[in-house]
Amino acid sequence: MRAVCQKFISRSWVTDVLLVSLASVFIGLIGQLAIRLPFSPVPIYLQNNAICLAGFLLGRKRGVACAVLFIAQGAMGLPVFANGGSGIAYLMGPTGGYIFGFILSAYIAGYLSERRGSALSVFNALNLSIIAHYVTGCLHLSTFVGFPQSFWLGVAPFVLGDLLVNLAISKIGHHARSLLLR
Image (cartoon, rainbow, N blue to C red; front, side):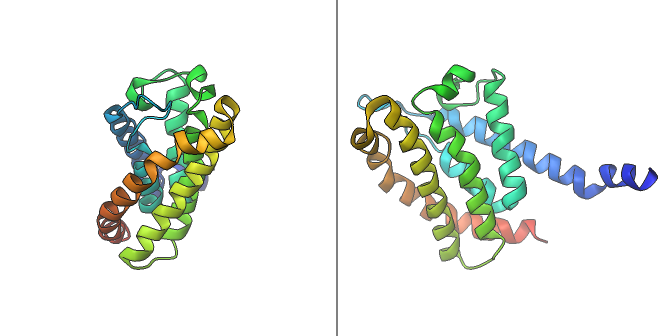
């Protein structure tokens, strides 16, 4: 029994909980910087990039835990989604697929980060994560507006911006990941 208690109180476990919690709070704060587009139900926001970065920095297990915690916070009513959105109804709305896609995005970024590599591989990991995010979001959005329209409203306007943001954060992510591994 003592060994079990020591495991739960270990510094590693506490560090994991702290990192996951801080990352989910950061992602919630980033979402408040969303910009609504008049032609799309999907806003411009950096939460998708932040969740990919969190997955990349924390690894696949902690990245997924961060995404699940973030979604749970929003489901419970905390205003963490874009522009202060929250609740189950928000998750079932047009952007819900993008939010649930955070789990897959964090996993992919975390998995690829565990393979370690250059800043270019960070960029590729972030882009693959964003593609997973687009696929889950677009599929869910298509139940509201149809498939071709979901691509033009929920993916096409954001690709260039996400590529530019991923390019910028790939440099940061590469250096930050090496600091976290020390």
